[in-house]
Image (cartoon, rainbow, N blue to C red; front, top):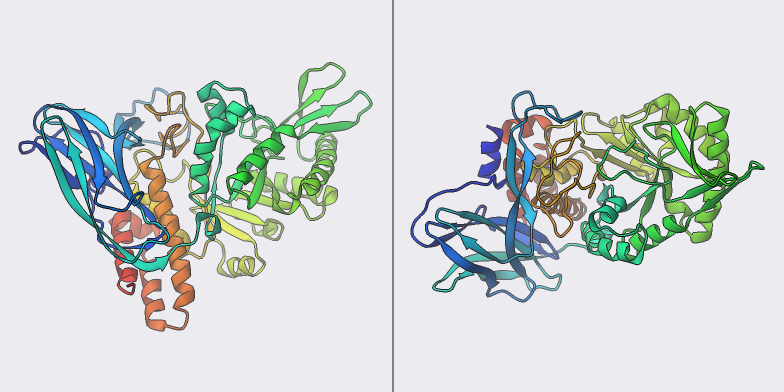
Length: 531
């Protein structure tokens, strides 16, 4: 039943169907809302044939250059929400049914049709920031050796302008995995080739308004939960006389690279409290890498981190990065976090801390960037206080939430819904644990041994996804809401209509009516006031 609902609004489970003679081209949803200048959006397009046609090329005609383009969607293998499906934990051999989902957006524009084929495409609309308001008319054109077909569509642009993604207020934190890129392309980590391969991938993230650089300061902070485990970006040396020294070269290259792309608001360093309490260092006497096994209340743990934090802070200050850097923790026990925070405050007063996990009122004051799970809520007074103090307060979804989510089997509109939820509940943004922790064959098979298909990544090595583009649409909506709230602060009728539209973004309403309905109704309520 879930898959039927999702297909009806654009998930696109691969299928075949019969149709009338020739090729029919149909947009799965209309482009009938006013778009802001500098906004981007997309729609799935179905091209259906009842006979074999070779070398069909698709294009967009009639619009200014760069205004819109179209390309093929490709299927990726995933797993569906079968009876008894569990999101978290081992997935090998659990009897799940495999599904194929149109999710990968390619750069391809040419394909062949077999009799009865349905080909899905992605129509991408990117309104220039200087576009004139008004109605734009274009066509989707299909051209083959013996035929031509075109279908008209319209785009209405209003006089509003979105800020540049770098200036969006939405605090987006999608964790990057540079080690997956090195493995996929078979390049040496931190080499020129490595950064060249990462450039388009991370630029795409910057264009979504990403705020945070994901940095790892120990090996396997999440105990190797992905196909490509994270390594430490900082080498720690321990000499026979007990002194410590550090090599920050990889860390510096990574941060400078991400900053150069515009992802420069925050550096989150994982982690003083890994999922396995094991801490790497190079023993200068033997020359080998060792691992210290220590609890957070031990003297060995204190010495390891005290010396590192003091040296790290000095390095960050020299680079001008100290104020943007946070020691980050992820879903760790409260008593262990308290021990770690004591060391941080002793070694480096003023060092900032980030946490993704449950809400802990006893340590709230110490957390500069707090991200709580979707199932929890900040107390209203606490949330207001954090806003006044300039602290960041966000939420996250992970394997625990069947919906809303960004799994391959999820309704793609749930990704858009996430931005609306943040706006409705006064949150600063969203964290998602994996931007590009690719599986072994990410372009074709998103299934993984531990998590639902699509949980590990939301973009592909050579391109975007429907899920990611829908997520960006929700972030843009968040920015629109913020702008309109400020503008309408002295217009109670409009502000009331906006608040009423936001009131439907609850889990209960999502379960009842689905993401598409809530977003469509809310957009209509807001758009009725726009030119």
